[in-house]
Image (cartoon, one colour):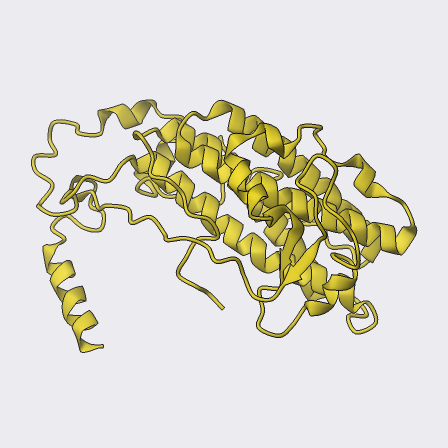
Length: 305
């Protein structure tokens, strides 16, 4: 089920910064980016052996898969917002004016020219250097312990990358993306650690947080900690995957350094926030050179409903 919201609402960017957008792309198509976590958990859930007999572990991977798809959407929106900058009221109307004077001359100097030339400032599954994400980054062995251990490693690596990207960004849009994902990534690392403890007896949660920086030191994490997001896993389903509460819950508590409380499984999904409306740029032919006719057609179609 898809809902027309982001998992967290992002503040509008202060300025256009395509190079900051390229940095944020690392959290989308990098080795430890959201495309990797989505791809790993999705195919592990499809290939999971003995689903009925290992239901809590299967449910954990399946539910987190759905959340990761939302993370791909969140980072993608952040990338596009940073690449395009603040909206200009009425900027998506008109014919684009005279384009013979190189209106986008500055774009030739950005790190990822393809993000403008091929994608109009949008996001794609590439890393910060425009290298394509690929299926070699997916691990699905069929061995539940190996897969869960890989997932724990993946979430710890993702945390490291989010911290590094966070330290490079000054715009509130990119920092909010990092703050939210640091909280939710901490949840996923904790969940996989607890799953492995149930299976093997090894207390992997003692490795956390890795890297050893508490979320309390990151201002953009605070509202998510205050609302208890660090203690919640969502089923992302109206009826399924509830049995992962045997792993995430069952008297287990939040990590030391985070606000205290018991871990809980929540039916459904987080409330989320609105999706930013990217203004068109007629001179870049997005959505087209003269968009008024398309707007009129869309308005007529909406009225028919």
